[in-house]
Length: 285
Image (cartoon, rainbow, N blue to C red; front, top):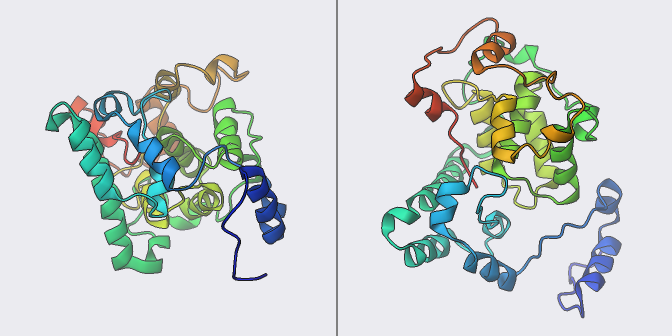
């Protein structure tokens, strides 16, 4: 294959045909074409739609005002500084932009950590806080998760979106990571590699360290969720059509699921509202 890649195309379809010809092995692995557009113009148009105030208030909801900037940030099409400056300029007051700017800070932090750790981002930074050791987690991702055939409508839908669109809402990333690591007891590395195969914004630093945060190898306790949490932030769109509703893996209170998932009880069981909500905090976009 020539290193002098074409850069000018009359339309997007022509570009797609060309890329499929140039990368046949990639096409055999995944032939989906994401609906998301690349390039500086698309990045600028996406940035122009960002509302820092609405982002802060609704970012955890699937229909919330998320930025969709992560693919452009991942490849340097747009910079963290540009987004920060835009957020402060557009916000009615500085406090309205703080949440978005804080999330940009997390991305910068992951990058600085990556510079320090290098390939060690693939290693557990700490021991699991789940009561299980590394040898008790399966090393490979199960086929039913990879193929979207678990029978859980939410998880299968996230798997399909990952492969077909190359993008997931951050809450979906956390839920599927928690499902992989805690409900199926599979090593976070297997899930992290799977994400990087498909995510358009697949940045090793943000991806791996977020997986470790969920797994508890880079946090003080594991992140997990229940159906009530998922149903709230998705407005029930998956639960309403799931044949397992009322009898799925995610049923029960957090206390009940904690006893089920982590019977050895290695991590803190404090339940005051402030610490519990902090533990469920969403990182990323």
